[in-house]
Length: 469
Image 1: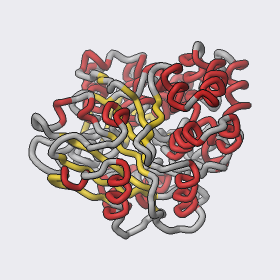
Image 2: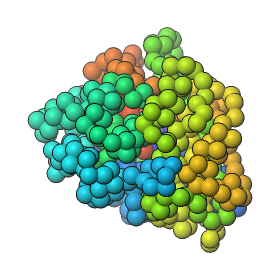
Image 3: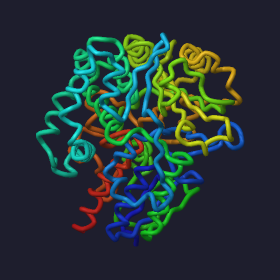
Image 4: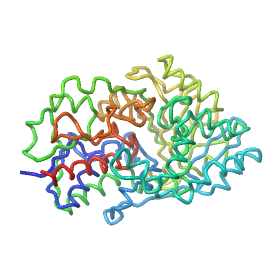
């Protein structure tokens, strides 16, 4: 009998399997697709030689992950590549605010009235980032805080809505960039704890940047899988699990799946019926005949580029999706241009590029024209560079990855108490009604992102049970 079986080979399932194997437990991992990866894959979606990341592409939480940093993933081919600027936010006048590795450079891009306010906001946390990241990514109850004072101070700044935090800034440049940071997790700007979201993304950039993985996000998953196999674990792909009886006997079962799928497979009935899924996204992967022709020079040097004219436009786009149930026009866009740092992604002189906008849950429309009109505002002539495009709305995203219910790439609404307490209002979120069954997906704390910490935290709960048995 195996000690543990893990279902789902996304970053969290892979991490949970590695953590258990590192501690001497026998582990087998089962994945329905023909390759490991989940939200960290790389495929030729458009033309031969153009390597696209169907979901996550830039990895601020990956390089800062306490779980990943404790593993020798570089031995298995993972190499982080850094663009000159982690992120840029261009404006219609051809200028841009930036999120640079340097706090001073970032603050200077906001203008003199807000430079000092930005430095004062981040100063208490900069020198304590590694401890702070471990503390808030390990909650709840998987580890005692190492620096409870800093964690409490972070909570005071981050738990209120981001609109409160943005009152520290006088001018629109800083407010707009910060609003864009919050929108990365598809949260309304006036939502609970949204200030913390913006702070996490800013601090992660200043600590270690927003890199891409050389060769594509698949490199993250492949490194985890290779490490797992070296530890004695086994990986089985093309293996769809429809019920627990499909799996070999084990002392524990760990699911990197949506709560909905887990309830269906394990026979939990309506146990997760209260779990809320959030908005979807409409994503386009492009093969380009050269770089994106951004008007703002800073955007040409950035790995990630946020697109929204001002904080009001971003807020309006989010309200359209969250409150009104319609696709926004103009949409707020998150875009990534991996070729700025990684020339291996496309043939010489060409580029891969992706952009997505938020849409209502399960939306079946086409946002292509709205996305490209928005891109043309900040990069005139963009359409002339397009060689091919691959579009994916909520139905296509859910078909590619079963965890993206209704196109929700966060695997659950990141709003209200569910931002912190997911998938149930419980101090033991990785446990389920069955004592031998656990959940480790992004539907558990600390939530979405390629960081493996949900898997790491769940693995702790599993090995505690295995050692007690």
